[in-house]
Length: 172
Image 1: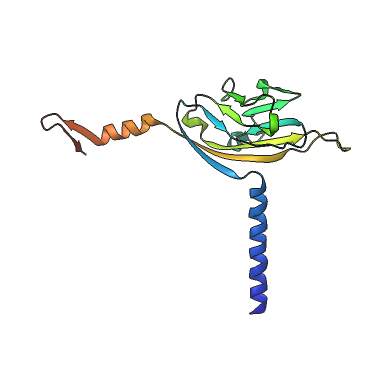
Image 2: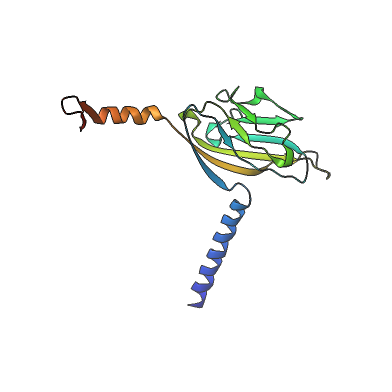
């Protein structure tokens, strides 16, 4: 009985540690919007050092060759739209271009159902150590769901029909 209790306690500790490390940064938030709206992907980055690189990605847009493009890419104190995935060109910008107080939130305009997915914000800060390149860390994970009000309207129109003689709806 004691060995199984010991094993169970180790499994429980491992489970807690794994989930706690996921929640330190990259705590997934769910956001729902309607097609055509603007959405802000909220993300609070580090405040202790200047942000050197900011990458917003959507992992499902990766191919066997790697990333096909970023949702948003920032380096050398400016956005690099040429690195953006074609789906996001001209539709994304930082809420605060200066990223004051670590605000790396991203505004996505004119959303469509194609924008539904998991978004990750990765941040690298200036490094005062010996390493030349700063390590990118996952800071934000957002699950975006874009609902198309037209799909619901079409479904309702196919399921109901107006009966003008009685002035009510008939269900099919």
